[in-house]
Length: 303
Length: 297
Image 1 (cartoon, rainbow over the protein chains, first blue to last red):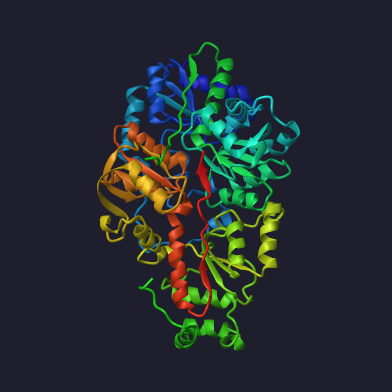
Image 2 (cartoon, rainbow over the protein chains, first blue to last red):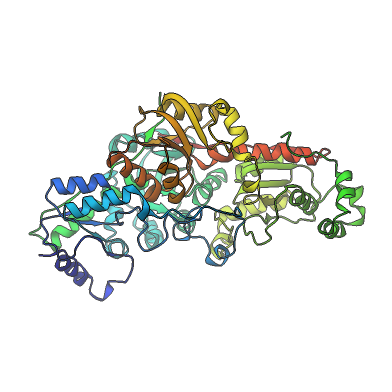
């Protein structure tokens, strides 16, 4: 089967529910005969190498290969962070902020040596990259979220009524064995083998009820996660340190919550790539399909 | 800072009477202003007039975020970010005008959506501001245009890196060969952060170190020259961090030292405090540290 035939089969599974979005081919020739499929959160250079080693030439990922610049916005732009990522109000964002009189011209991704190197690797190895993000997230069953919950050992601990409140923003509520924040976060760190998970809150605070939401968290979703869910802590991937993060600082200072944990964006999404591979295997049982973890990109500053 | 001009409030009123723009400002001052305490609006107008930067009235960032500008000022608190914790400590310090570099209401334009207004955390914070007759004013865009850059002058001094500065704007350094992890540890110790992270090889010995930015554009630019490492205050994983990870995977050894936004910019508002003390000599002006409250598990 060609890459195009495979992705058409995926789209047909959705039927009329398939929605136009940034999903689609981001690199390579869709007419390439597929030898195997690798799923990943984002197609890092290392993910591509591992896929080649496993003889998988179709990469299905939540992002394109060029650092989220596909489809405009999301980086490379002139702003502090794109409106797409920060969720800044369009009306306000349209008003200019003060800028230096002669800003340097924007450096486009395509002009960098790394872009050329990665593009060449994709071409030399006949790889095809297909973005599967908004549609993947729209599937019933919250595979991405439940994949992360299972990786944390929280399956079966879900509070269905509270989860219903935050399912529209991709979250779920879990009752975990009561422990101190220090023990709770230490447990996640050991279980997932993390180095640089960031935590806000008093290490002695008791944690028993947690809202979980993989990925990058915007303020409107942050507010939603703690509204009427009566959670002690929120666990997510990443957030903006001058938007949703101070919301959680204030939530903790006001005594309404106790802790906020950032696993890291990649760390929070790798289990979702496993869930994607599992889902694809049911749809394409004869294909060689497996997930490739991006892994944690961070080290900590210990001497 | 020594480079900022110091004048008394009375001198300011006399001096500003001479210029057109300031005459507009003076007309807005109530008649009794010369004897009574200054209002928040007057202090804000003074800061705008004295910053030495052409004011952009279209800035959606540098505006009043809470309180009534007619409120008499008991003291001014300058901070990186007006978190509830900072507002509480500003109030304890006897200051009711808060000058914050970053947002109050959890979005860059401080948009008060229905969702925010209905939120209990918003209620607590707004009530605290109102009950204590506080005024919050954001100062972001214009302070970033002041030169020498107040966000690097004090920071580089605290880091002890003045002797390594390799460019006039202090955005490039030349060190004796030093492991990246040592530079990161110095930043963590001197700027009091527990959340400093490294992308790349912590053992890599580097000489030329630059500064990146919040954006992929700024970080690609920082790494296109001869810099072996860049120091970055908050950047997104999906663009900047994965770019640097790929750069290393492609065979180009480069490191990125990632500090929290607060760690990167807190000292800029300490400098602001010193500047404001200089132009408001009779007023209580304090610096309230936001602090990096994140820790690594």
